[in-house]
Length: 428
Image (tube, rainbow, N blue to C red; front, side, top):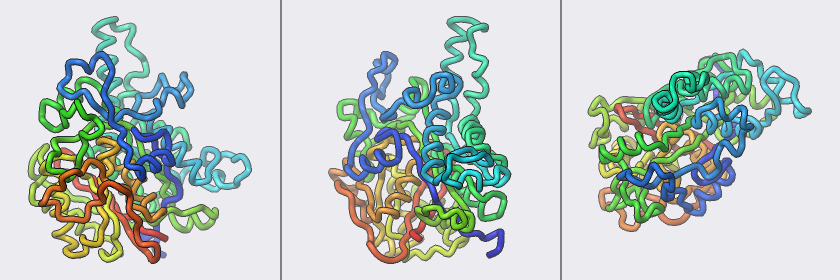
């Protein structure tokens, strides 16, 4: 096979989310239809217009050594935890190029052929704001010397790269809420074009802080359903009124099929490819007809061997906003026509909240596990389905996907600025 057209597979997954501190507990909660949204009990939240969020189920400071955690922004902490789970899940027991503990797999990765692409939509915002408060209240000498590497948007990717000894490239695409998916798409191309054999890829975010919440709330982007936190995120429901902010990370290990076969790795799915476009419509509002998203879907088809008839599942971006949810479904219908009727559409943000730049990473993990276990997680809180939601929305309970044959799933991600990214995965 040509080095510029190599097959890419997924060999490891990791996550830490509002539903669980790892991918297994997150997946179990998704299948059960569990909400990770709750009331913010921090003192600073009392006067905010929005007092709900989907906070991490396991605090990263309880997982990482204290000395390490204090030098990392919360977004980097999440990324490191998810990446370490994915790395181990792929069968690696040490840094690339170093002797392993006996499994014989870590040493087979050439550090010069290993990369990381971990994205964040906002970066170290809590570090930036927190250290500015320190500067104002305690003076120059009390500002942490770790502030700059902590607040850098590339901090999570750089720290994961250091953790695994990656030398093929450490990258951080920033495209708002499409960042995590764009990172994974970039990683696929790193392998497909021959620049790397293995890439650690995903998205992370930690922006539950009064300033982002107040800003999102004032622009009318977030749900203000403070009285019913678990029912606030309701994609495709007639009463949807904005997203709920979440935090966490989702990371996968991508690998060339040849490299995975040589070391006898377990393969979750094939990473078929990506489709990318831009709305060029508005800095915040989605293009209502779905044309920009449709172009990304068509770009995916034009640059892969994906057959629309193979697609049985879509993890929708569906943030629970009035325009965005419908634009996505319109785009699917524009490109796939009646094939959409055979696609089980899930909106997992109904349970995790919206992880911004981390959403694509976590939802990629969910998409891959849906294929691997042939089960689509439900969309919760859809009490009154919008009559314009022209698709097969998986509501209330998880649904079995076809048990036989090669099938595929899409993960859709869109972001402020008009960014559209669609990823496709397929059973092997």
